[in-house]
Length: 247
Image 1 (spheres, rainbow, N blue to C red):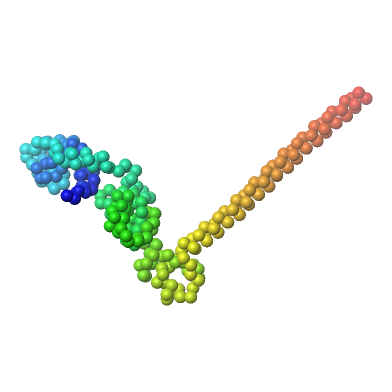
Image 2 (cartoon, rainbow, N blue to C red; image 1 turned 60 degrees about the vertical axis):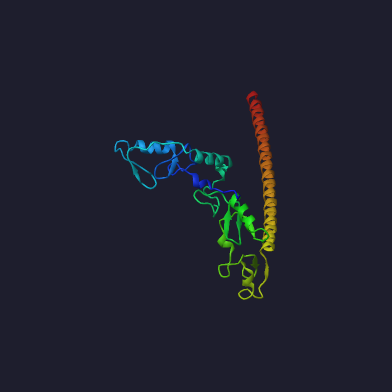
């Protein structure tokens, strides 16, 4: 018998938006944390009419709340497999395109499917497309920028003539007879150029620091020399004054 798979989002309390705690089902069939629905109904005590926060169905008198043991067991199992909080996508993170409800961080992006996946959905993607070579990359929120808008193909070629990334189909007509290299080759070349530039700048910085140190030493030496001259002149003036006084 196939094992049923559940999403944690199916077992979130509609009030606190967290996994159900001490779950109870009310007469309309919706489930809540016992404390959450109790707080809601406590606020409706004066009217003596109690409603479901989701479907707004009303009940009178106030229904008794009994723990849903089966649902509680399912939730407990889910808690054991729950991803840590830092797996949720935050500001600046790439979100999983498949997750429903609260999104998890994407770990990979597929340049064929044009979707990003969290670890769980990435594993399902790999199982589903086993044996098929899908071009994967680290999770990126710039998938559309990596695809040719005209041919909907991956921008895996670089045109040096026009200085832009293009797809293979672009080389046939628009960029025919242009200086074409693979995007990977161009990237490697740019990285090497960047390293050389950084090396040159580093050498210049080191030379500037060396020149500055020499200048500091020269200034310090000049200060010492001036101080010696000042002391010599002071002593000479003092000696001359004594001789004059004696005379």
